Figure (cartoon, rainbow, N blue to C red):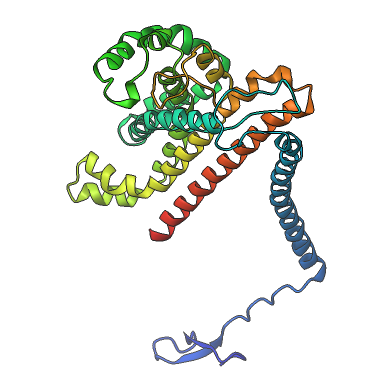
Length: 349
């Protein structure tokens, strides 16, 4: 028996064949290193890494807070001179006389949300199909190049999308848009003047272009989540006789649904802040927004960009900064809701 009360028996070499055994002590365990200098180095490295990580997180919070403070600081003087209700006024912005200004965000928020949701409705099914195909159906030698091509859509500049949408896509969509306007005008989504439809610079065209722009974001996030589905679950479903679609429906989609929703919300945040492409497409349409896909109008971002020449005056600029503050809050709320939805989905699973 050893000091720690453990013994081991081994055959007696001298009395081989006699069945006699002798006790042999186990080797003593190696002592735990208590070198203070080595332990101090480990703890110092942990502290440095933890401090850097915490500092990065705090820096992001401080940066966001600083942006909010700046927007509020610059918007308050203009809001104090606004004679219209900032949240319910939807007419033309009157900022020529800075002592009697009239501006509001009603039309801006309606157009922004409408075109962004329309783009999201178009992009989400396509992104889901692409992600499922690349991860579950496509051969490996083909999935890589296809994923690369889809990701390249995110590298195309916004101004190129805008020019392409107005001068290439709009003429192609014109016959279909006219048919919708003439045959489904009983539905408010397709009811507007024929002249606006013929012009092509409508929310219908802008929404399709915006859907193409956010497609790579949603696809990339969904693809990366779907590919992480445990291989054992997929093989178990196949072993039970499930078809490839049944595997996707019962295994891949439940596993990656939260990631897919998160990618969609990222795409929505991208759509809410899109500027140049929507400015190019929508600025030529004179029809006021009336909840139709063939109307025009300004989003928050395109309205601010179109008035860049007025930024030399603090009050005129402050009116548009106030609109930017609302857009800032809107995107923050959307991202917060997305985080809450993903967290709730993860907690249930």
